Image (cartoon, rainbow, N blue to C red; front, side):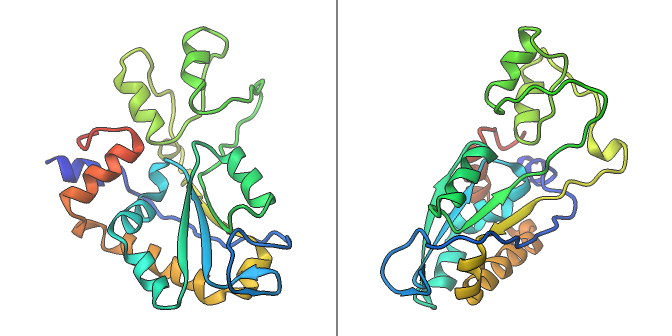
Length: 212
């Protein structure tokens, strides 16, 4: 069943952490306290299967409805990888960022690249292997000319993904941060109840077919 196959991509335990960055001003405008907006939150996301609950709550509107009750609006920023998100939060263009896991590797020569460029580096022989995450892994393998050498589940390594918030924003808006985490957790716990229409949105956002 297509929906069940898509759900299988969402497995494991997500460790959610609010990490802190000391910066001065937020991304929003309007009501301001200690240099931070109190009626806007700017959330940065990227197409990683690790954060399917956030895609779901974004599409279905649950998070925005909960924050609207607090007089807070949500501005979404879409990125393709982590480095631009680093820049956005450093420049206070975003308040909350969702990051994927970072692999730990030894005894190799590292080549810096973006997920979008990794397949071509591999196919052209410029690198011997690449370290990727979903949905990029599924898309690459399904194209038929690459294979998985190893994955975290083979050696007992569980992915650790983080939600990072700027320190000054989080201090001024603890209720907003709490609502984001609460809605994320609620969506993750009820993921089996997700509608087919929502799964189709998630698949499109990740660049996959629902049955992938």
